[in-house]
Length: 124
Length: 202
Image: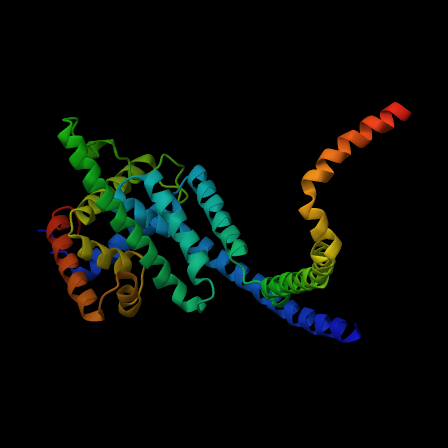
């Protein structure tokens, strides 16, 4: 008559069988496990924490961009007043007394211009 | 300029020990994974009954451990690793459930369990005769079938406690439940296996 299986015996036998099957894994499987482990370690390399200098890289980039922006903006302001001066000069010429008289006789000047050309042509 | 060089030198001197620590951690992780990978593979293989699937699950667990938990204390790695693996196995079961429903819907039927060969055709390291090897393989197959028929939580508790040798606390971490639940599931699993295998084992 068989002795009833005790819990401890069951666990011990199960563990022995499991350990045995682990030891009997074939070379191809062990090779695949080895490759998997190296891929996992490569992942560790990829997620390695960045150094102190690398941590400041974004801040340095932003500061440099801000500096460039300020320099460019100031350059635009310096060039601003120059056209204003020339506009005022043109305006003074326009409101001068002679210019207004010329505007009143605009039809005469437009008529005389071609006739002068014809005369010049005759002389020439 | 000299101040800048000084700051750089201080920073570099801080980086050196950090790099050494990282290298040391990498070696520790390599050692840990090398020690656990074979057992983890058999663990996953018994659960999913397919070696290729088991290899993929173990690789995923290794990568996730390295990516997310490498900085954790080394003594936490074992339960964390098995927790990741266990979650992968559960996801695999969910996916299989969906897949089998689709296959049944199209009337092709599920793959038969008879196709599964639990022990690879490798030379026996213990130098046993072919008859003894066949006997061991058959007993292992009985165990795997019986373990495979356990409810999921009981199977996890039995494999982690009895086959992997984790203590109750470690098993609780790996299973994501209380230590009391581990004891209950484990006890039920052992009784169920004793009922199933008692006729064959002594």
